[in-house]
Image (cartoon, rainbow over all chains, first blue to last red; front, side, top):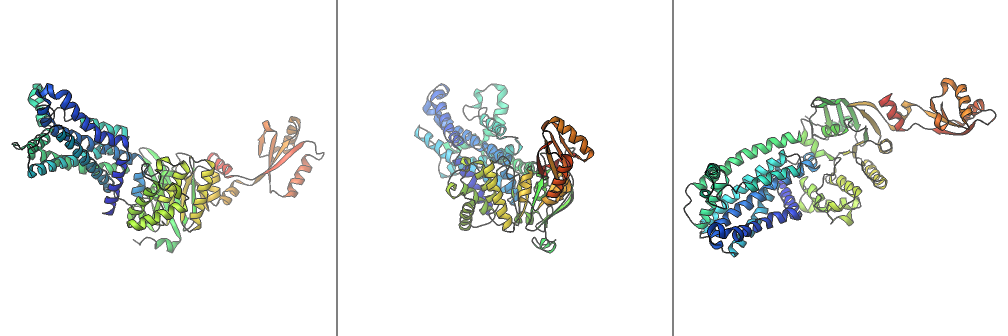
Length: 248
Length: 317
């Protein structure tokens, strides 16, 4: 198990020392939230005060997905450089290398989540959740993070270059827009409803929002759970297969 | 299955490969490689780009499975006893396998930890290696700021955290400036001096000549010659007496005199070459015979065969 700790520490250190990635992961979500609340908020809900409460959970999800998807780039960096051969020649398991990147992604995102949450609270976000609600919302967010990070790792194993792996980030960054993250689905054109209601981000955002605001959540948390576990169930074996194919 | 370190002690071979073949797509990269390296010896695998050097290294270091043939390294089979082989070797590839964003010391400590050393021992080992490779001053700097030579030294150091039995170096000096290359040669010499078996690949004949006990010449997936540098040079023959003639007319006159005895002709430089044993007697007799008046021949030089000659002869002969 020592390898997992060593390689997680390594991946965290590499993140810390990559200033542009760090800036993007920490500052971009906060900027986006400010843009949504102050630029669009008035138009969307009449007042920016009310909108911050609606949108803050959405930004949390956006930020989680975005940060997690960077795993694609960090994994691809390792696969295209010489270091993966050295690790393998040292009998270090590939899963330890990948797990290191995923855990670093989780740590990185917990930090940016706390920052986004702090800024949201400072500008008027008033969640009404008790300890249970916070815990449940945090749990779903964590699971979503893990699922996307592993999916990102798979994308990183698939991509030929770190730049190509960055395309995955774009995809994940875009996915929350056609969902209820920033505006209610009902306000979108009819043809988009089917996708917006049933895509994986929607139940995640619905449950995190309902849990944090202490509102009825229906079966959203269960759907979110299923989606995340489903993604993990695909991403983990996919990673194992792609890794073997890549190094063969 | 014998435990690693046993079989090789019995046979004296650190590396034994028989009939290794490998194809990628339809391209046959290796067409049956046989190699043996004695414990503590240095073998240089010499060949041009695309000859199959890296594929050979990847198979011997367990990273790639051969399509056919067998190989044992440090007493373990590279396919069946992969973990044992990996425990006994180190690989320094063509591209630096280091984290640019970590310092030299952090890289070494990480490799030592991955090899199973506890934190404190890993730190101690990292310091020893930094000292040994003259990198102590740069220990706290990020590898991204290192020069090519420093990076290559750190890369080799990173493979030595647990004293491997066999060290593989894939083109250790490609892209280095002459001074760094010299330092690298000293490093390899010191490794060999300490009894480590070294398997290195190179495109440079001078390097193989300088470092290796045995040179194996690889061309298009096949070993076309193997032996000590001296043996290989003898194979091609021999020394040559190169005569530089005084004029075009002298060149033509001596060329006619020599006939089939001339083995080397460079009309542009007015040079004719004749096989020689390198003795003073032979040179004197030859000069007397060809140029009794001492007017035709301006200069002479004895030309020893270089590995370049060997290589050209073997690959294009």
